[in-house]
Length: 242
Ligand code: MN
Image 1 (tube, rainbow, N blue to C red):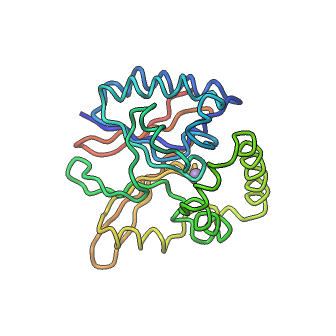
Image 2: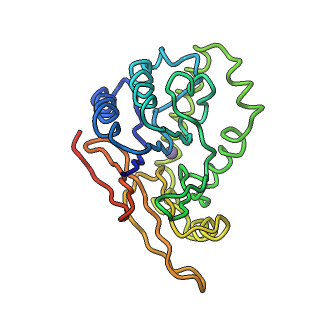
């Protein structure tokens, strides 16, 4: 048996081919898995469960729900889709896990997370996380706005995020090594899986006194998919074309 991990599909109506590839993955490969984890930024933006049909998400949620009837499916929200809520869980059949959860992956305790919490040198993003992503008061206030108001706000936020990304260096947008090492130690794990940076890779670390640790990074879905397959023999990442 094996488990799948994916992230950063950034589904939107602007890239229907990615939504189609995801729907196909749910109906074929994923159906043979023991479990599926989506580690955030499945959607380019999510302005509330009540607006799912407006962003064209209904066919996607239906296919997710078909899979979830047979295979346990889990979701960790990213910085794009942190507003997923109870209705999303009902529609998709996925269960939401907290960011930075430790799971038992074929005998190896494994930290799974979206990954933006590791990018601590990106101060502007960390401020956004603190003020918005993890702030329930902000969340309630935003969800109380009308849907057109929320769409406007999301567009604004996306423009600001693009300006911000073009103004900072590539290093700052990647994880900070000290944050990675802290995460291994504070969660008492030697293995982690995350997305967010879109820099698919497997990194090895030497931990103080305690040997080796491994960080697997998922890529985004654009020309190809990025699918991590874990089983009792180990982990590999594949990139089938889209
Ligand atoms: Mn992200």
